[in-house]
Structures are given as structure tokens and as C-alpha cells.
Amino acid sequence: MNKILTITPSLYGGAGNFITSLLCFTQNIGYKNTLISSRLKNQYIDWTNYIDILKKEGVKNLQLDFFHRESSIFWINCEKLVDIIKTNDFSLIHTHSALPTLAARIALEITKKTIPILTTFYSFGLDRPKWMDFEDYYSFDKADRITTISNYCKDLLFKNGIPESKIELIPIGIDIDEIEANKGNRHKTRSKISVSDKDILLIQVAAIEPRKNQTMSLKILECLKGEKDRKYKLILVGDKKDDFYFQEMKNYIEKKNLWDDVIFTGLVDNSYKYLFASDIFIFPTLSEGLGLAILEAMAAKIPVFSTYIEGTKDILIDEVNSKVISIDNPMEAADSILDLLKSRDTIDKFCTNAYNIVHDKFVISRTLQRYMQIYMELI
Picture 1 (cartoon, rainbow, N blue to C red):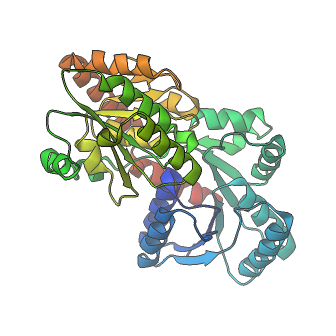
Picture 2 (picture 1 turned 90 degrees about the vertical axis):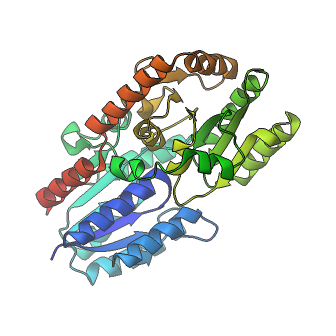
């Protein structure tokens, strides 16, 4: 039996969802999985949910901190990792960030074991110091193979010294059937959140944090509020990740008198029912490895308005399957929304083209099968 050790510093959001799907899939086809994640106090709610799912599937869960970079924390956890590798017969180590990749290579050097390392690179956060980039590219180069999720991420790796022969682009896929199974009752969902069938409901699905730029969505709503023909409302679906930013948003809502038009759901088990209840999907993100939420909206056939940056460039084709918006021009975005709503034919064209690109390029079953091929090549 092949035993896989998966190490990730975090388990939330799109990456957390994919890691959980991959572990469940491999567990069900006969692999024996051990997961190491940091899972520190006050981290994200969905982390606990993913761990619970994995426990039910029989995945062993251990806790080591490869989230924080302080040398004292890193080396203590490296020592613990050495003991884990020394006492287990793993066939493959799959890391999901740079720091655990470095730790895995160090542990293998110490134990003198020969175990292939596969690492997956999702994205970098905003405002990273240069030394962190330097450390991460150095660490990624210690892997035997690297998979990544977008052309933007692949180019970053190559331009910073990672041999192209090591890198493979495998976009995170989504389960279209699962999304469509949640279509449900649009009227019932809207009634529960006090949105009438005549209202235009805007939606953004993302953790509440500066990178996701929910303040732009609020400003778009404010621009639309002056329209006399119908009411516009905004639902923000996602866990509160940054308390200070969340308070800034609430202050803005208070100042602009938007409380009657904004709905916060917090973390939900299933965001798809809100997608099907909505009319327009807004995604003014400032940084994105790919943009899983965009793919989910496209699969639900909701018109997408998104910034064209980094990984979203692999998905968006302006005026074909989506409408590209800027990060800081809410009036322009509002005008584009109003223009689109005038034409049912254009909406249908966008939604059909969007659905087709998801179906052709971003299906989770193909993603998982490719990972299985890489696993067997390395093992």
C-alpha cells in the first residue's frame, strides 16, 4: 500500500478545498494518507470542517507548525518531522507550500531516506517582503516536481530560477455536477435573506480580507443604489478572516447607509444555493492564484464581473464570458452592470461561454486523475 504524507501550513479557502478533495479521492482508491497541518488557535473555521471531513474518510491528522517562519518554531517542528519520517514508510511527500517543502528536504537529508517530494504552489499574498520570496523560491527548488494552478504562477516559478522541466500547470478544478445539484429553489433562498424576486442581487464569495477587496463591491452597490427602476442588494458570502478590515467595511456601510442592502452570511457549508439565488457575481480581487470562486459562479451560469489580474487571466475573456472591471472604479463597474442587465441575449451569451470554458478546462475529475498520474510517476 502506498503511503502519502501531505504537509500544508494552512487548510482553508480554495486550496483547502482542493487538498481535502485530493486526500479523500486518494484515500478512497486505496492510498493511506497522513496529513500534517498547523491548525493553530483562532485560525479559520473551515479548517476545522475540512479536518472533520478527512477524519471521517480515515485520513490521519497530525499538527506541526509550518505556518510561522520564526527559526525557533521552524526547527522544533523540523525535529518532530524527522521523527515522523523516520518511523513511517512513506512512498511520497506532497507539500502545499514552500516552507514545508524545505522542512521535508531537511528531514530527508537527516534521515537518509529517499522519498520523492511533490509540491504544489497556489499563490503568494500581498505585500510580501523580498526575503520571503527568496526563501520560497529556494525551497521550491528542493522539490522533485512542482505543480501549480495558473500560467501566472508557472511564470513566477520559471522567472525565479525553477527549471521549467520541474513545473507542470494543473488548474484546480470544480465539481460541476455538485454545483448543479444545489440549484434548488431561488425564490425560497431569496425569501430567507429578505430579498424580493424583483431585486437585483449581487454576490461576492470570498473570505473577508483586504486581498478580496469587498470594499469595492460595497462601492459598486452604492453607485447602483441611486437607480430608481429597481432595488439592488449585495450578499457577501465568506468567513471573517481579518477583523480590522471587517470593521472598516462595517464603518463604510454605516457611513453610506447601506445596512438594509448588505447581507453577511459568514462561513456557510454550501455557497452554491446563494449563487443560484443571485443575478450578478462580483469578484474585484487584488491578487489571485486562479480564482476558484469565479469558476463556481460560471458553472452556476451567473454573469461574472471580475478584475483581470494574475491567475484570473486564465479564465476571463472580456465581453465573451465575463466583464472585466478595475480594482478602483466602482462607477464604471456599476454602469457595466446596468448595461448588461438591459440585454438578456448578452447575459445568455456570457453565461453559456463561461459554462463551456469551465466544462472544457476546469473539471475536478481531470485534475485528480492527473495528480494520480504524477503520484505514480514519482513513486
